[in-house]
Amino acid sequence: MTELLSLALFERGSRSLVVKRKDGHAPFAGAWLLPTAVVGSEESAEEALERHTYRELGVEAGGLEFAETLYLEDNEDNIALSTRYVANIFRVLDHEGELRFRADGDYDDARWLTGDELAGVGLAPALLEWLQTGRHQAPAVAPVPAPSGGATPDNRRGWNAISRAYQEQYEIPTDRLVYAPRCPDESELQLLGDVAGLRVIVVGCGGGQDCIVLAKQGARVIGIDLSDKQIEYGRRLAEREGVDVTLQQGNVEQLVGIEDESQDLAVSLHALNYVERVDRAFAEAYRVLRGGSPFVFSVQHPFFAATEGGAPYSVVHPYWSRKQDWQWDFPEKGVSARLRSWYRTVGEWCSLLLDAGFRIERLLEPPPVEGGGASPWDGGYAIEKMRLIPATLIVKAVKP
Image (cartoon, rainbow, N blue to C red; front, side, top):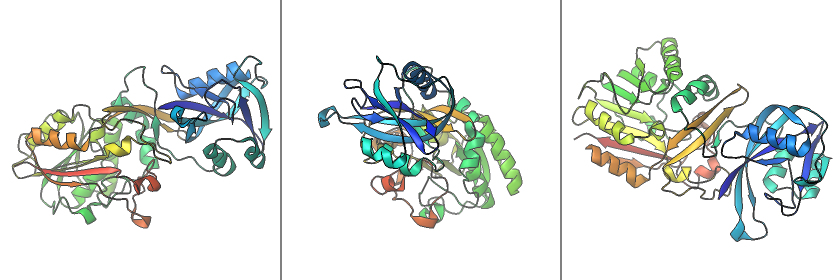
């Protein structure tokens, strides 16, 4: 199983504070680690760390800055009892009080150690490597699993909160159609054909980049997205790019204002994982398309979603798990969002399309694009993992 941890990085020059957990005090009983809190179901990662540092170290932590996410394994000397942890590390920028550990608490030793000295206390390998070589590098911004429980994530509110930071971080191109991070683009896959003069609807258009690409190729484009801020960004971007597209906020489960059989092509790129009732979205796409028109979409591959983001890429969710909650932090921008994604097996995606009336023409699970051809939109998609299992599922269906 996988649990969520928060780790505190206290620094004094080149030295970091590490603590030895008492025998019998899980996680990592008897081992050296950074000060570590298990995140409860009703608290954020930061709240858990603030609670823990006050209780165990006697200080009120302030200015927590997200630094990195690592995947740690505690096998407790018995592989059958192996527990995997998603460990979010936060740099403690300041604190009030004098650091000390309680005699009746979780730790029985604490030391300030340099990078070379850290190797001598037996830290978890992934943590040791990061402390020695990676902690001074800019962190990768990517979603990490959020604990279950609490309020249901509001995807519209979440995307509104991170829209600007997301668009600044991931420069999605407006000169080519990108199906997913590190994925072959439309110039290679050739799924859409010539779109000049076609009426095209983009389902879940985000910041409008896909709409702009299609408009530059001569299509008349309507884009629908749940997020008001993404739509606002897309309108400004389209104006800067000098193209005419129609972008509107809406729910893709109900395409209000789009007439029956009025569209020649429907496209949805990496958006349908955020849609709960995708059967309704498929029914709406079917309704607005003319007979003989294609519907092309890409989603995160369900097996990719079921595995860890870091080596050894173990399966941490059942392949059939329907939903996952995510925390997406942009620490340099000071914004974050708790989002919910829905996943379906490959078989279920196909069944839902057939139930809506579509005919499936192509189903692709492409290997990653290596080197310079990769999209800059690749946060959280490790090339090493993508070489082992498909990250993206692409489907081309047609309304008969």
